[in-house]
Length: 638
Image (cartoon, rainbow, N blue to C red; front, side, top):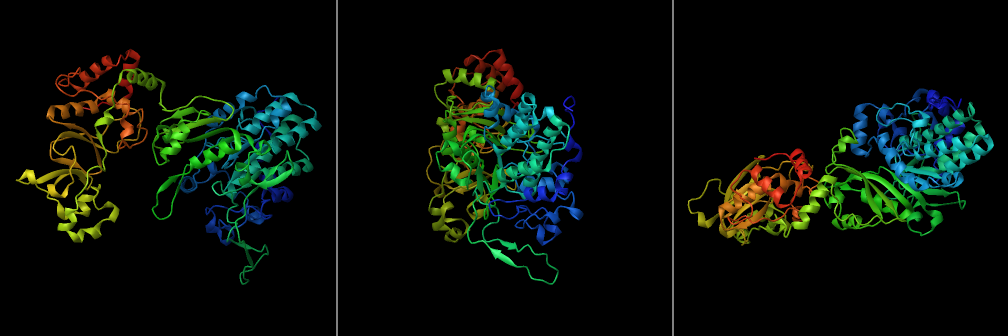
């Protein structure tokens, strides 16, 4: 049989034979922390009745017989359910090539290990879903079975080495058991967890069949399955709890008829998930792994694709949670390879800036892979700022990332520009919240205090034209000295309205020329076009929809700045830090050089934007490769 490893027994039988064996299926459904069965952990099946609620156990009779084939891989589910679980349960398909890239990177330092030592390296796949990083049996995008020789999960790789070096069945089985003892994963959703466990035992069957041309005996199957059920368990990765183990009502297990009441028991405290440590032969709470500095309790590798965000109750806002999974991975392992949104590498997005800086200055962390277009990895998924695979190794120092630049070409250009640049344009950047209303508004219109939050009463918010409409004039007033124009948006259009000067606090730019730029533009792609900047005359200010650049005495200076902002050169330098739509923060502009916008400048601002670009390329010593990169990737603005 070893001559043909493109097929395997379990490719043909899949999970059907497993679910027909009640002893195996009982183990596959076992939760060793609670002593009960794993929970559904998803409301995807709730339409089928009470027993299919997310807080109920998955029972054998609910997935066999009439319900055979009820639980199936996500790729086989209908498209509406796939999209629902992508939105609400953070499920995305991780392509096989991404899995291979991550696994292979972790394997580089293990190539010379003796077979037994390599097999015993401990790996954990976090939020494992159907366990593609452990056993890459089928393509997560297409559902097609992957031939044994082409699989790239870490268990697959271990079996490849085992199959190559050991032919005696007794010795092979002994080491196969060790493979499973060293392989861990956790998952919240019970249906995915069952599929993960099945994939692991089917992978054992695949390899046994490949080596010995027969179906393995039930005794060894039960032994392997028990290990799997202990090592791949149900857990909420944010709390370490077994889902629905606190305050949840559990059926007594007795079959009821329609007229009987359900007997229940209630858990008093949440149950923290346990993990079996085979090397020291003890079971502990998983949470303790991150709290104790004990090498016996650490993993050699943590790998996976963690959840990216969750929606908080109340404000319906998406909060990033992948930083938590990254931090925890670094606490419990020597190496960690995780694929996440890349925004934090540009100190952007909703992650805390302090955490972003901690990552950027961690000498043990490097970027293994980056793509600013998330759709290239996860189909039909738009992740602003792109996606990155980061590699953490606490035994190596890669140097600080400090500033992550998203392409080698841009990195080269940035190096040249930075060596010449004396000052940044962020020196003439004015924070969008620096313009403020005065207290006079509420002295003249006391009833308006109830229209806005106390904390926002002096803010010139993006919706101020609607909130405080009575203080604005739509028409240009005759006595301009007593009024200030405000650029904002209303009904999805830019508008200038007028407000009495006494209602605005003093600001250094009020009597000056400047340029307003929308605080949010595009997606964060390198060199994308910006919304049209607005050259603002004296006695004009913006709402918080815009930022302000400049503080000039003459109109020509503001016009020159406007041309500069629209130049390809300035926008490619803006892309060094602008990885998301947001460009409101001062530091986003820090790599855009400040220019002299007066008539004695070394740049002739009277020319076209294309002419200005050519002058800037020459000023910063850019070569033909640099120029071709900019001209190709940066969108034109007139």
